[in-house]
Length: 69
Ligand SMILES: [Zn+2]
Image (cartoon, rainbow, N blue to C red; front, side, top):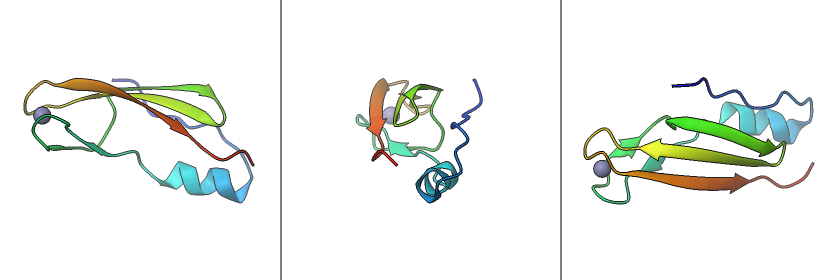
């Protein structure tokens, strides 16, 4: 698993995002997934996370957009 490394920005908005760990729930069994299997920053305002449920093996992707600073 790669480390989740958000881009470092000095704006308050970016700092808030950096402290917020992405979490999700399995869409199939509802198990909480605390860390994405893989994360990719498309640009400083948009990240894509790949989630995989350890309980049932279900995997899915989410794309998160942040308001532009
Ligand atoms: Zn599951």
